[in-house]
Amino acid sequence: MLPNIAIIGRPNVGKSTLFNRLVGKKLALVDDTPGVTRDRRKGAANLLGLEFNIIDTAGYEDEDPKSLPGRMRKQTELAVAGAELAIFVIDGRAGLTPLDEEIARWLRSAKTPVVLLVNKAEGKAAEAGILESYSLGFGDPIPFSAEHGDGIADLFQAIQPYVENFRAAAAEEPTDESAPLKLAIVGRPNAGKSTLINKMLDEDRMITGPEAGITRDSITVDWVWHDDALTEEEKLDGIEPDRQVRLIDTAGMRKKAKVNDKLEKLAVADARHAVDFAEVVVLLLDATKGLEAQDLRIADHAIQEGRCLVIGINKWDVAEGPSKLFNGIRAALDDGLAQVRDVPLIAVSAFTGKGIDQLMKAAFKARRIWSQRVSTGKLNRWFEDAISENPPPAPGGKRIKLRYITQAKTRPPSFVIFGTRVDDLPESYRRYLVNGIRRELGFGGVPVRLIIRAPKNPYHEKD
Image 1 (spheres, one colour):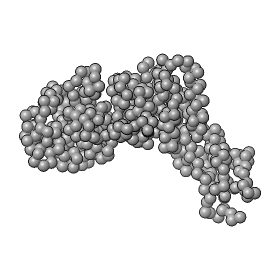
Image 2 (spheres, helix red, strand yellow):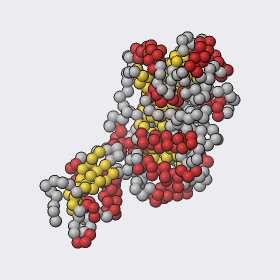
Image 3 (tube, helix red, strand yellow):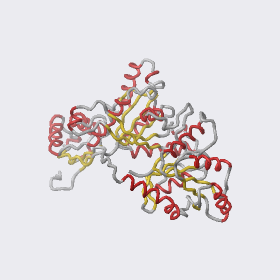
């Protein structure tokens, strides 16, 4: 278990740049436009060997709590309340502002310890800002440059005691060795992705509202889902009812031609990046709009990346003609995603919570299928039967010989078939083999990779 350290400050002081430097990757979106970050974002940081969780927060603004900036401020306050330390960032070049002083007053009333960091401190332009910062009452400030990395050693010395104290206190606590399910929630804007995650967590963790495109960064949240309906087979396999999940909320993905704003382009790219790191992708549809071409594009991207796909039809509580809608979407998916049959389709309501347990059950089952391996003996017995029942064609009167098959990897399940004249094997026969793998070997509903090669070994025939 690692301590949480939250980065706090008004908009555009360099919080996300600091976050990216500490995690060693460009995970948070960075732009000169104030207010790019809207939700809390957590990353694993390593500062000169010191490990901790770093939390990027939205810019702290004095606005109506019901407005979008007000809801962003609430998320920042929750981040500080759950952190072992807060890094209060101010802009050295701009000097102190009334909002900086307001944030300082709030932090002094909070129980979380504070380290003051003066960013953009390179050069003489920041000297006045550094001197002014002493008046905030947090002791000696740390002159820093998130852009260039100046001041890293001073920051290390400032936070080391808090990290070491946390680790000492947590040393006796047991650790959970089970790997959490990495679950990305994707879909078009306003499909209800953040609302669904809030319902799962039973808290207002993500900012939601009628405005489209509120979520920009891909936000990761750890969660424990309690499975009340474990099957006897799952119990025999040692599966516990409390299941670890790493939820990933993503920005809505509109049709590429409609994305003109620079920040939206970055957000969509970030969402696609989140799919690459997920194990299971939940594509959330809007029941009031049905299945659209953009939904199929998003689903196809997940499949092309080799990820398990589960489709949830959200807003089921307000859907008109639900039975007809469900059957229509099922038929459209079978036509539009012919490369993966039997993708799980679950009716859910982010508002009432209906279908969430079924959605999670389907997601964990998909990961089990995605991760399974078939023995070479069983695989080749199926392979021999498949070829015997439907032999490969003989284009131009020359036979295509398929000799044996092996499973090269899992996640996604990937198979290699060796034979001669494989370049002439028609795509229809390849689909026949893939469908057989799914149907007979238990890989239904997940992407399957099939590679066919001509081996360079003694069995290779020169005809």
